[in-house]
Image 1 (cartoon, rainbow, N blue to C red):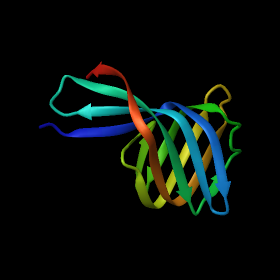
Image 2: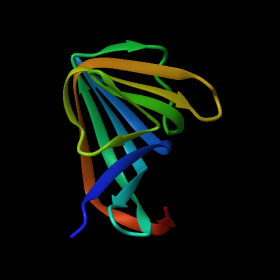
Image 3: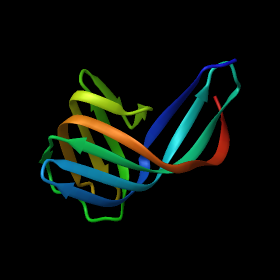
Length: 133
């Protein structure tokens, strides 16, 4: 049996809305791509899914974008680890966390620092295609 790793792909993520309360922010993505990497195979598989990314105890930098928008690129930071344009799942991080995204078509960017970050997958992922390694 092979090991499987699921990886969130940041470029092309469709940010549908942003909900902010006292010290928490939720980024609602109507679609992100998930790469399922399978050890010992000649192909990986690509999936799409809706997700919510929630950061708590936040500080924001830059102007939050008008939604809906598409994310061009970004970093997800889990303490000493920085993931550029991708991040391994599950995301249930505590400590010094950050997401920093650039919006496609505008070049504007925003950063959210916090003390915890969780990614909630909504419904089931939908298969797109297989990808040769």
